[in-house]
Image (cartoon, rainbow, N blue to C red; front, side, top):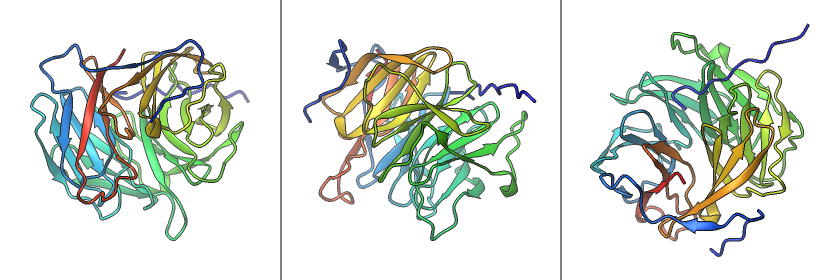
Length: 316
C-alpha cells in the first residue's frame, strides 16, 4: 500500500570562519523598522534560551533557570513574567494562532502548553520518564500538531492536534525514532526543528556534526540535506520564512540563511548575519522585517547575576 505524504503546513510558522563558498558575513546594525527597539533588555539572571513571536508585536521568552515565561511588548520593550515555571527549564517555544505556547522542557523530558494571555498551564506531557537522560530541546508547530526534538536521544515526539485545535491525551503522544542518514553522536544532537517549504516533512539540525536533515514524520527516516558542503556546526534554533531557512550558530554568533528547494532536500547558503551585540544567540523568531534572537551568554562567569538581552536584526 502506498501512503500519501502528509502535508505539514506550518501553523502560524569569536573570529568567524564558515565553511561556505562566496558568501560574506556581514554585520547588521539597525532595522528598517525604526519605531521598534533593536535591543530588548531581559531580567538580570533570567538565562533565556527560547523565543516565540506570533502575529502580534509580542515576544515570549523562556528561562533556563526555573522555566519562567516572560512576555515582552516589541514596540515598547517592556515585559513581565506572566507564567511561573515548574522549576525545570523552559527551552524551545512556539505560539499558535489560539494564543497557546508550546514549551519544550529540556532535562525534564516533558513539554507543556500554556495560555499566552493568562499564563495558565493548559496541559503537560511527559515524553521520557526520569531518571532517563534526555533533553527536550525545541518544538515546531504544523497543521497536524507539535513536533519536539530530543538532543540526547534519537527520537522526535509528536503531539497530534485536531483540526479544531483540540489537544491530545497523554496516550496520544507518538515517539518517532530517527533513522536513515541520521546517526546519533556523543553530546548534543538534534536541536532546532522546522517544516520543509512544501510542508511535507520536517527539518532538524544536528549541532555537533553541523548537518541538516529532512525527516519523514511518518517513519522517522532522515535524509541529509545537500547544502553544498557548508557546515552549520553549533546549529541551534531554526526558522523557516518562505523558502529561506535561518539557522542560528550559537557559539559562532551568526545566523546563516539557507535558500531551500520546495522539498527541502537541498539548499544554498545565501547570507550570514551577525551583530556586535550577539552573545551566544540560541533561537530565532520573526516580526515585521526583523529577526529576534535572545542572547543565552553560555559560559558567563555568574549566570545568576549576569545581564541578558535579545537583539533584533533585519531578515536580509
